Picture 1: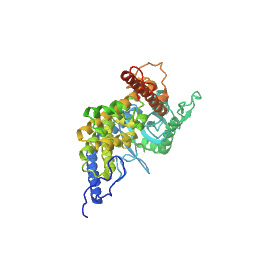
Picture 2 (picture 1 turned 90 degrees about the horizontal axis):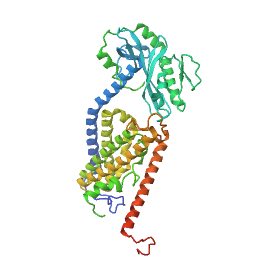
Picture 3 (picture 1 turned 60 degrees about the vertical axis):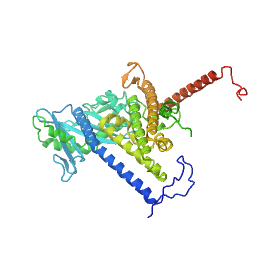
Picture 4 (picture 1 turned 30 degrees about the horizontal axis):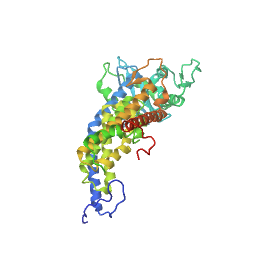
Length: 249
Length: 219
């Protein structure tokens, strides 16, 4: 195709063209094609630089969260959730980073202390991602931490800013029952909900109940047969355990 | 069009033609992510980076971009800078990146940025385009800071997370919610309009000290 000379179709301020368009379509496509390729190259280069740091931030956030909800275990490692139950080894052919897993914590003597379990469900604004520490032997929680939430500032965000609500999950028995303020009867499975953030606080409770219900018997079976960890924490195990980032299942 | 000086190109966007307070452009981030000062600063810096980078490239490449595809090409350039800003913020300040959420990606459709490319950078030499972008970006940042400070002080009783009024202060939660953005912008525009009117009145009185109110005398 013969290239035609470029003619300005308008004067650049949005006024209609006074001359017919004479730029060859090939030139227009080439311009956008080259620009797109260059843009793609730049983005890939920046991504290559940024991605390891983004993954490291996610891993650090998850490591801190696991430590929080299992009350600073000496070490912990990944346990994979498979169709046939929990498995210490990743399922054959599975992507170990993105496979669904829970984290088993050990005390200084190498004995299992409990599981850190992630979960996510829609709250009032968007998905609430959280992690909680759970002891299958007593069916009680060690604690709960919200990993990601876009709940309303000043109201729904109390699910992680209101310390009375957050600490209310420490030692609570499952299945958890949310109680309105002042209605608590003192039972071991009650948590006070937040006035003005009923949907957000109920979602937190439901995420935990649903995850315990889904994994409960598997966790019990796995805990009974779980191998003990080495007495000294193994950093390699810890690092391996957090590679998957903070995303919920 | 009157030719402007370099000085005019730089300061025009900062105050006289401030993108948010005068032109009412870029209101989406100005309303959405000014609930705290750190968020306002991060969004201001990200927008500044995208605007100056885009203006530089558009001005450099203006002779190579056919006018028929100029808008697509500008959007491509802007989107590239926005993606870079998004990745860099996620890598360097992950908590602020999380707070700003989708609004970083939405810088692509900030009409202030595309507007400066179409109205200025695509017609002027690189130096002038950069001055204009720096001025406009600074003006945007000033507006974001004004809104962020106003909203954080009233909505959280703090500035940059430092408490100002002690525990007895009851925060005006509405100020950090979306309605607070509209209320704050309304108040700031009102104050800005009032100040402009007073300013032009003062100039008029200085120029015509014996009164020209009736209009006939001027004519």
